[in-house]
Image (tube, rainbow, N blue to C red; front, side):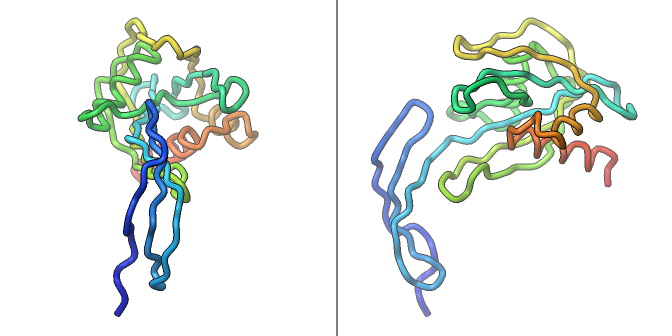
Length: 184
């Protein structure tokens, strides 16, 4: 019987402020070996802010329109950010919600956890829905250029369908919220 698949060795080729790039030597399921470039990321949390009271037929969600250099412009997103060292996903979601929108969640429900691009990164984003929001002052970072705006869930779903929302974490979070908010 051959050895189990997995990492045999790793070599760090870049250590940046947010992520690292490693070259991993791996054993594949058939026993062969190869090298893979892996982007290491500390993980992140994202949150669907729900402005409407529980049970609303077409709840209002708070989205942000944010400048993203990688997309060459603004995109619609849910609030999100990377986990600080030692920070749990729920604490990160609460922090990012407040920093980016000024909203404090009275209740935070876990939706799911996703891998962003498992072909080359270990980044996982923990998705939440926030309820019973109290609006306060935002605390955006210097490199965050965004505006928050409310939208009905039906409008957001149309934006996803029509390609106006292209951010993967936002699409997954909103579709997960919409599909399972009724407890299906």
